[in-house]
Length: 118
Image (tube, rainbow, N blue to C red; front, side, top):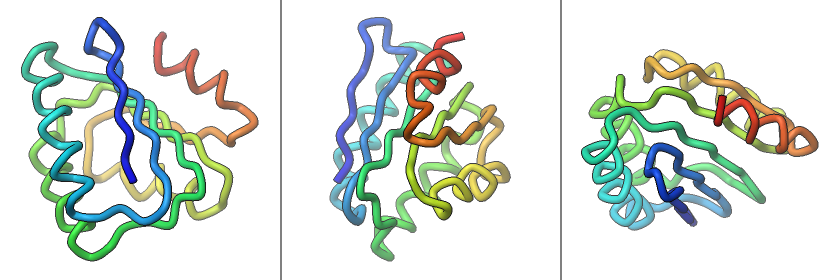
């Protein structure tokens, strides 16, 4: 499941990921991010992962298309999680975006919030 919240300025998007992402999740998520980028130019995204189990195959394809389309549209990407494989996502994402990316353990969520807003 993807839950997206946009700050009033539209430049900061907070995304909560849980469970296993589906193609349908991306069909709801992508148009909202597209609109924020169209309105505001580059955006910053704070991703909070809770009980996150990755992607179904169709969702993985949608994620790859999203990454290719928005390679230079994301200024900063903060990933907050609680497992080793989630920490590895920061390194995995780097070739797919020009964004500055950092991973934060769940215990450092406040630090992630500060960094994404700097």
